[in-house]
Length: 407
Ligand SMILES: *[C@@H]1O[C@H](CO)[C@@H](O)[C@H](O)[C@H]1NC(C)=O
Ligand SMILES: *[C@@H]1O[C@H](CO)[C@@H](O)[C@H](O)[C@H]1NC(C)=O
Ligand SMILES: *[C@@H]1O[C@H](CO)[C@@H](O)[C@H](O)[C@H]1NC(C)=O
Ligand SMILES: *[C@@H]1O[C@H](CO)[C@@H](O)[C@H](O)[C@H]1NC(C)=O
Image (cartoon, rainbow, N blue to C red; front, side, top):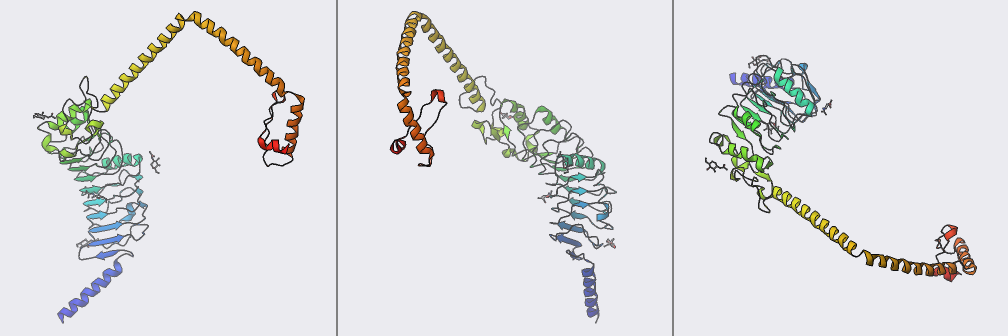
């Protein structure tokens, strides 16, 4: 009897929860989880049960979230809003979630982020995923402000991968004093400015792999040096240019204080010059590309140098040839004069012959014949007009064999 009553109670509870679960969502009181996945929702459902600790809303079309989107959700610790085409995050959007530990906003199109969008009283947030979520460089500026004013003193892990920012403004992360993991792979970073990672004294992992770094100048190496002794570095899968300038970086990699901190030493490879492509950076000799006379075929540098040399040589040879030619002309100036006179006489004879033929062409009889041909062509006997008329003073009629037949 007791058992029966318990069952009825349970089913009543289940029914109650069923009615309480928002349309298009799945609610589980056992795991304290609410999932609203790929239901084409236009906003976050308002009636999410209060027991929920994990909320997963993904694959919908929610353009904006703001302060009213999550009322009375004090129990939420994990919120995943990935892949919802969210473009705007308003002020104090997550303020009601005083136990929020993990927030996933990845795969969105954040164009407008309010400076206080991420602020939650008591700074409970530990994990923030903004992977592939920023729309353009303006949103990066917005985000920097939100990280600064969000009071994210407890944040441990920040994923900013796949956002293509190109450059990071100095002090972007300086208000995240607890940060341990900073993930920046798959961006288009080309340079690390002095101060880019200032304030990150607790960092244990910095991922800069899969970016566009061609090398790290001394300024950047000093920046890495300030990170604290435990920070492991991922620097692989960048298009390193193994020219002379990379010496400092290679020596730094090889120093006893840095080598143990490299998490992916074998992934640091040269992308150029051609001769060193795919070579591991740590195998590159310290004087790579710095020889005063690089052997031919050593790399692009050498190629460029030898190309320049061959151009100079070609110019010299051409100049010499022209000089010799002029000299020969000078020596033969008498013979040349004779030759020119001969040429002029020859031309004169040819022109005489021409004049004669011109007179023949102007024979009135032949002229009449040509007009007849034109008339025949004009009458449409043959589709195309086969006679070409030039201005009357130099009129010459061109006659094709078919015309001859017509005449
Ligand atoms: C949060 O969870 C606790 C314990 O499970 C519960 O007593 C409380 O009612 C919940 N809060 C809300 C707003 O439902
Ligand atoms: C952040 O989100 C992306 C995409 O949803 C996911 O692949 C990645 O693993 C997440 N990062 C972390 C640190 O969980
Ligand atoms: C970024 O996108 C927003 C919204 O479309 C726009 O207002 C802003 O001008 C864009 N910024 C840049 C640098 O293109
Ligand atoms: C790395 O350091 C060792 C000694 O610590 C040295 O023998 C070696 O030549 C160095 N390699 C490079 C590439 O600098």
